[in-house]
Image (tube, rainbow, N blue to C red; front, side, top):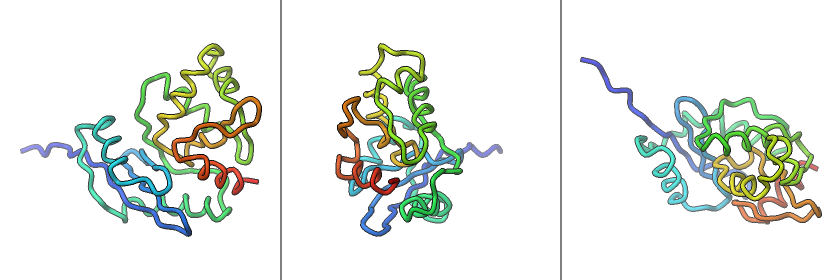
Length: 170
């Protein structure tokens, strides 16, 4: 008899310093890192929408290597992530998220810079929407995208979290 390959999203709540972040991973890699202090329901709703065939299972041991990289980053000991990522989104979202991963640590770019990078300069609003749908805060560094005039604009984790992440990288 053949065993059906069970589809599982492993999750844990990372508490480090003042940070409280739900993180989740599939067998392929980290798939979700939520906003600071967001409820578990946000992760559950994301999983139901993006990976409806998967079951959520709490398992710290699976997430330890991912948590370690995040903690090192939060402590200023890590500038780049080496963990595997498992991003689920439309091809357009994927192209935006890939461009975000290329923004160097400690630097910021504008939404129009990202639109240019993906060779779709008229797509600034769509770029903003794709950034807003980014399921991997911090590791896919959407906090490094700011308005052309230098203002910090919308961030799924809230502007306070965005400020803290940018300050950490200075």
